[in-house]
Length: 183
Image (cartoon, rainbow, N blue to C red; front, top):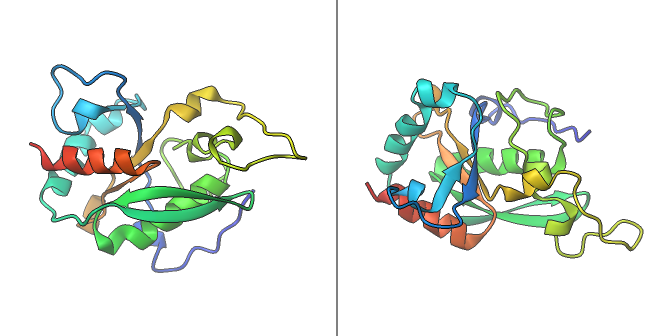
């Protein structure tokens, strides 16, 4: 298990509820904004019943967000990248969260999460250029995890500007930013 020494200033910024994102194969005919290009993995009713998704979307739409920023981490010593979309004030915490999740199997995090984000599986060996074990390229054990192209922090709570998204590809990050600016 990867062990991280959480910096004190990062601890209160780590999310507990992160929505997994998938790309829609075909744009939603009734969708607008982020729903046009992305679908949300069903993770239980609480994030919908309590309004976390619409509340966070409203919060993001009220911010002037910079363009997506490339972030880096490693999985088993192999570099991986993603794109951060959110306020500058949260980028360090989001990058830290991503680095921890990409290096740590679900359920073995050093912090509490309501649902497993499945970042580790989404960045499975077949998704990372050059990843081999004993010279052989291997596939992840869970094909389901590879469907996820992004993660949306939806538990901003009382942190004000605490919501953000991390997406695997620049094109997805650009579509996400475009989607949250469309009302």
